[in-house]
Length: 133
Image (cartoon, rainbow, N blue to C red; front, side, top):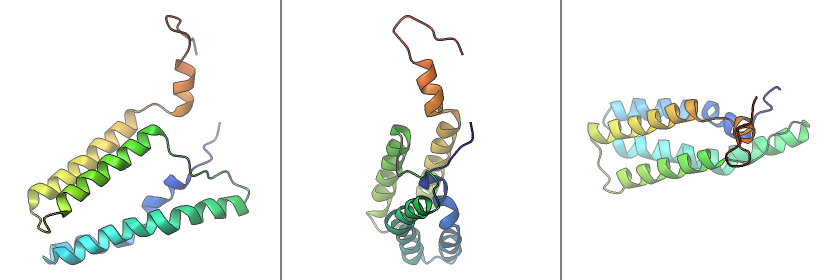
């Protein structure tokens, strides 16, 4: 069964240039500009690109729902919470950057090992009864 795709599949590609710019500016020790570029890019993706991809998919007769699974919702909440906690003081150091990188790695590893929605529905059944594939 081919993967139709969702709006969440397009987002990392759309914001790659802004993130490269944020890293270059941060390397020049202009952290306020780097944080502004990174967070502004994320807000732009959330408020404009995601709904636009859904509408473009609708016009092209492709199924691109704005449906996020529980795992994706929790990962987004945790990442937002960590970024908000680190940005509050207005300062940054290598440990906070390492925390952000480790948060990204943890979410990526969890997403790799997390079963697909189709696999979850196959594995669920009445309690005590194992469903064969």
